[in-house]
Amino acid sequence: MSERSVNLGEIARAFLKIGAMSYGGPAIMGIMQTEVQEKRQRIEKQQFVEGFALVNILPDPGATQLGIFLGHAGNGTGFRTQLLFFLDDLIPSVFANPLLSNKPDRSQIAW
Figure 1 (cartoon, one colour):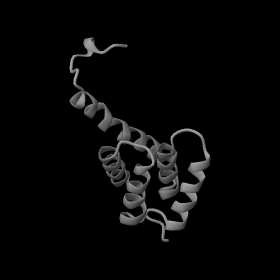
Figure 2 (cartoon, one colour; figure 1 turned 120 degrees about the vertical axis):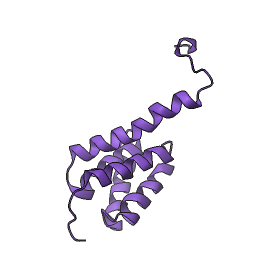
Figure 3 (cartoon, helix red, strand yellow; figure 1 turned 90 degrees about the vertical axis):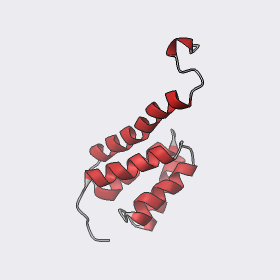
Figure 4 (tube, one colour; figure 1 turned 180 degrees about the vertical axis):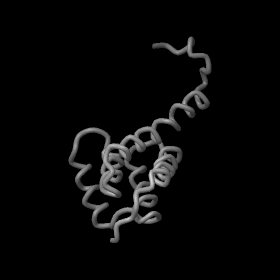
């Protein structure tokens, strides 16, 4: 695969779409493959499979680990794409939780 220039806007849009369309867990990994490997062709399929196998033996959430791997392997920018993945996964949750909650007043939430 030829080297592609790093476009953080493209990466941010892909990760934001992943974060907005899924709730985590193993199902998100298929969406990651579709968005990053198949549609945008940031990495080869074999490289995705190797990363997927690697994150399945690591502790902690596999989807987060895979997002970090894709950010690093897809363009080599490392920390910036890892941060984008984290924020783009977090932002939809921050806005969706209050909208979907049946207790809109925070004072009513039992801590």
